Image (tube, rainbow, N blue to C red; front, side, top):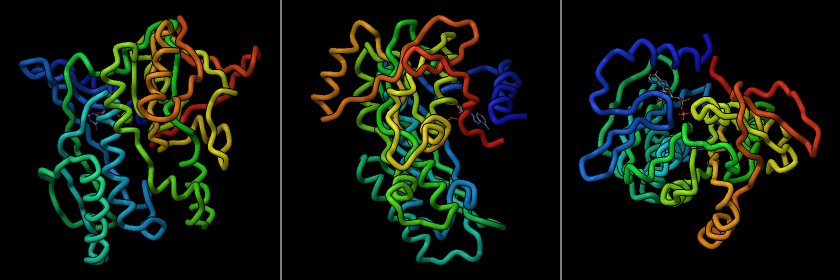
Length: 314
Ligand code: ADP
Ligand code: MG
């Protein structure tokens, strides 16, 4: 079974239970609408030593900061403001007190940067390796929430930043160089938190999510949820200078936003985004009608059929 097949089967097995007011499995966060028009959002992500990070390749501060950043990314990817986090951490016997202190310092720095308090969690021992699980909570107006299911035919597809740097960095690390520009990016992902919250307030932005598994995989989640297809113009994909097109499309952990914008508002939207953030996001394609909910990759007029899938745990 694949990672996404497993998630789909969970969704089915629990579909007969009462939802108790929650909108669950399938998006970057679960949603709980509050009386008065706001909603709370919930997301959880796990980082495992030797799968998500190597203890000696990154500083403890980097691991702490990244663990939190990737969770805040999921909250902002739905247009919500992160408001609190819970940290569950399992530590093996061979970990030093200094490592833990420095990990927490990295976590604290990102908490301070975004004004997000740590409100709970759990601490245990581990038989092997460090296990970090974080739950992040967000809040926003219900009308500002951006779901994966909201893409419309004709929408322009944007990515928020340059892709592939994290995958190139991971390659460097596995080859033994831990101190390159790309490894720095891999260890210090700059999630687009302020951008996500701002995009939430703009009704011309339809679907949104963050890029954690690569454009090829993540865009397909939007297509499936919205029952549409996409044309992606390969030459418009912003690729990190040390990355290949495969890194940019199939590589994970870039944590840039992927979103669609009403075609009629695209120009005005870009102007406003530039005014607010000092750069423009990258228009890489458009949403089309399609029964297969798949991506048509194009270079100029030429259509490609590459086997680009993106990252999956199994
Ligand atoms: P993301 O990459 O945005 O963190 P994932 O690919 O991890 O999202 O998960 C996709 C969806 O499946 C999310 O809504 C997530 O909450 C849900 N999900 C993943 N694993 C589980 C699980 N073990 N139990 C319940 N829901 C899960
Ligand atoms: Mg996500």
